[in-house]
Image (cartoon, rainbow, N blue to C red; front, side, top):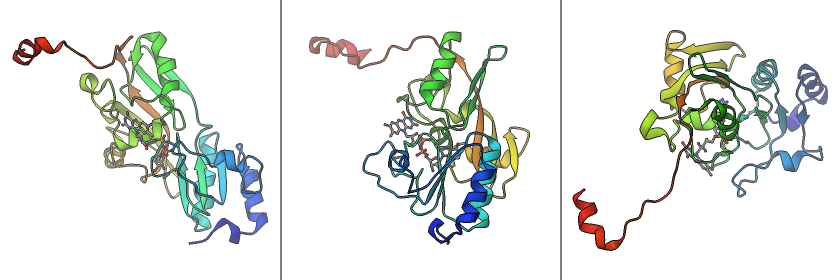
Amino acid sequence: MNTIKNLDLALIEAFGNQLRGELIAPSDSRYDETRKVYNGMIDKHPGLFAMCVDVADVMAAVNFGRENDLLVAIRGGGHNGGGLGLCTDGLVIDLSGLKSVRVDTSNNTVRVGGGNLWGEVDHATHPFGLAVPAGIISTTGVGGLTLGGGVGHLSRKYGLTIDNLLEADMVLADGSVVTVNKDHNTDLFWAIRGGGGNFGIVTSFKFQAHPDKTVIGGPTLFPIERTEEIMEW
Ligand SMILES: Cc1cc2nc3c(=O)[nH]c(=O)nc-3n(C[C@H](O)[C@H](O)[C@H](O)COP(=O)(O)OP(=O)(O)OC[C@H]3O[C@@H](n4cnc5c(N)ncnc54)[C@H](O)[C@@H]3O)c2cc1C
């Protein structure tokens, strides 16, 4: 496996010219800020960040990684406990620029960018009285949480996040783009519903949303003297 350090600078420059988003290398003053993830114990030093802003950027980054035999990590919200959104010496394909949320009230569906965070989705759906079952923390990425299954406050009522995934657009390892849903590329659609992040890069998700305006959460406590009554109930 190759490292970024071994690559010709001209090759990296040519890659940068293909992108609308930026490249961030270790020499960049933003590098240390960029390599931070949610778990502060993770201290990985990637060789290069490709800060993608559209699907074309993701395709170019995947092709660059494959053609140069680089270790590649994909970062959505950066919440993974083990820091799987980063790698050492390789290429990080950062999706934080792929954000957009579109609510379709004609069928209560929501189209979400591959780099969105769940708080951004909630913010967009809430005014319409809708919600997609997701996790409990607003800064978790839609990408990693969905591809791992997704459990949260609404799961008991509406199922896991993957139960509500209707469709995804994906960039595959060969740089091609496919749409997966119950009718197209059904094996891949099955795989991404809980299989984790290694089947391709999801650039867009489409979810079923549900009517839900306000959730009141917290522990439910009863006085000790009512134990018998509560247990019988
Ligand atoms: C504080 C905290 C609270 C949490 N609460 C919940 C919870 O309530 N419910 C729950 O189900 N989980 C919860 N999690 C777990 C969380 O869902 C996972 O850590 C998830 O991987 C985070 O996704 P991310 O996109 O933020 O992470 P990242 O670190 O960016 O990515 C995680 C993995 O997913 C891959 N990935 C991310 N986006 C994409 C994409 N668009 N396409 C392809 N691969 C991608 C990455 O390559 C990596 O392997 C929580 C985690 C934390 C730290």
